[in-house]
Length: 509
Image (tube, rainbow, N blue to C red; front, side):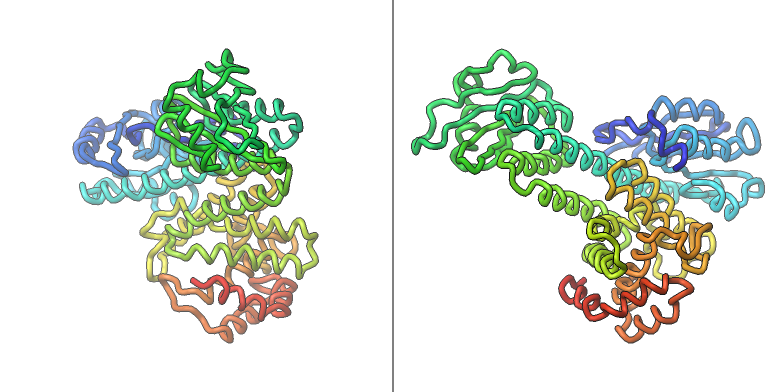
């Protein structure tokens, strides 16, 4: 694990990106470069947000600004500033010392001979390389679109990862509560941690044994500004519009979301109902909505003390597919590809004799094998023809990028997914990428996922090929047995060939 993975400063960054601008840092010792960049991109917009420019005239100034502004989206970086290698040294500092994997670094040089493109792309974690002479207004705008799109998607991935971990942790906290008062207070506390509450929340109990609409909703637990209302009647203590939402949630037996508050509805196996009010003047991002909905599902199950583990696993799997789907959509592959890879990996894990729990986790982790593609420029990711050597170098960085995106997590599923992302392109004979491992030294999850991924991809249409026939796929897997693929995994695939082929019929593209 590298320095970026353990960096506490960057790990604590708030990833719900609500700023009205995209921050762009121009690092160049020539003032006219700053002026021209601002002039050319002055009216640029991406996702209805303008650019906010920051300027640095040396690598040292740029590093200070990157520390001060960890939400910088794009760095337009000159190579030669206070020294001939100042820009390249800054790249290493950004990735390894500051630990910022998100900022998109576009290297701009007026002296290409001092920083040859192929060598720089191979040795440094940059995202694009341009000579200043080729950066016309239209090409600079195109570069900015690609960089900002990748930055936005990577931050969304990180936000979903952190949100998923928070939901799992919060659900575990409330599941341990048995007393209804403890349960209520735990739910309120965890909601504060999950999405933040501007004024607080309160929890109401309802006796559902009466047939008529209850006259009052008694407040059983409170937090924040509502602490003084405990034991009062919510419908009398709160504004009429909020009281109406409480009644509507009770009547319809479902959660209610309004523009400035929401009410969650719970019912247990004893037919006891509860209402949780959160407000007022709050604001939820689309991600917050999904996290609250997922949390509500888990709270409902905890409240009734039934099947919590199954629901948590289903929620995790759904979030995994959302994350994996973001990468697959960018590479114009179908969402069902990641579903099938997960199911194939689980099937092969079982056939290899792995413990059931490990095989099940493989099903959730394997779909994230290509999550690093989120950081690859569209022009390379979706190129219909063969990649140039330089493009191939960039394309292959998706393995390490995916491992870094997932590697900060302590959750077994995401840690296994990080390992798979890093190893699923390592070949049995020691070739492949990243370099360094061969044979059984390659993690078993990576070996299994490679077979599952290649098997399914060969049978799917891609921007660069038509789907292969089953006979051709089988011949290729046999040909590469012992060189590209773990022989034992290929043998298990052949043993369950019909079952593997049936997955495509059940989940077609």
